[in-house]
Amino acid sequence: MAIDAIDDAVMAKLQGDATLLSLAPGNVWADSAPEGAIDIGRFVIVNLQLETPTYELGGVAYVAARYQVKVVDRSTTKTAAQAALDRIDTLLHNVALTIVGHAHMISKRVARFAFKELEGPNTWQHRGADYEVYADPV
Amino acid sequence: MAEGFTGMAALIAGLERLPTQLEHEASIHINNAADTMAAEIRNEYPEVTGNLRKGVKVIRVNAFVAQVKNTARHAEIYERGTVRRFTADTGANRGTMPAGNVFIPAAIKARAHMDEQLIKAVERSKVPGMTGQLDVVERGGD
Image (cartoon, rainbow over all chains, first blue to last red; front, side):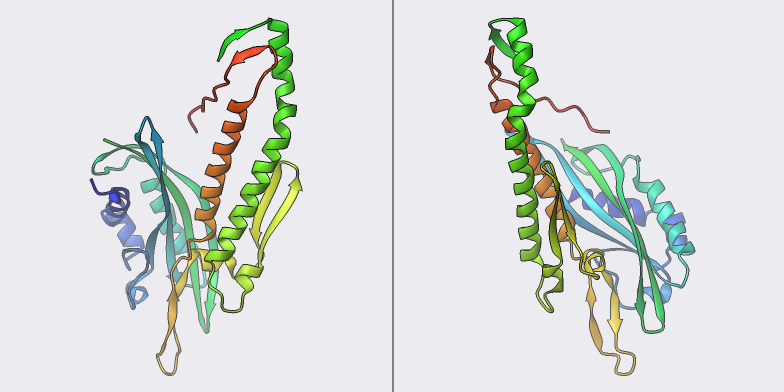
């Protein structure tokens, strides 16, 4: 059983949503976006912060994985990035995921963040949230 | 919970005294968790100017509440990551900054270890008038 199955499930959920891809045409990337992604459009980055197993009776009872999911947009306003993040929230908060080798228990938003990055004449919006996914290996 | 007790009154009195007995030990575990978390974070940060490391502070609100903060101005963007940067004229890559993933994982681990220590402290407690051992049962989260 692949122990990164939850990563794949989160990525598949986001990459498979046509509405999200229309809001973030720069695509959904794991850990970092390639050079030039912003030239296509605002994009989404997903990264695993930490996954911890809980052991009971000598085995893994469940795993808890926490992900940072953020929308990055080159814009002076937050509106479009926030719309993409709102769509991400409908896909990940309190929604079942299909996880290979696991029974999904719960996915929930546990934090939200937002900041602007100034780079010369450019303003970058970073708007994101942290999600926890609990799954039971089967 | 109890395998036997000498009297209900003695058990209740013993349970009522339990918080006082546990306070001191709980305070130790809470403060140790904060100090350990801060040390781990400082160790994980890269050192360029040293500002990220110097910014890590442990604030003791009271005996049972400790906060770990990073007061460095760029601590959050280091944690969350920034976009790739290029020098405009030469096009030189000034380096991407993916999410640092230092503070939040350290907090998760510290909290989990602290909870484990606190549960063990309760389970180790001896309640006057009671034999056997306390068992902590965690209720499902929301």
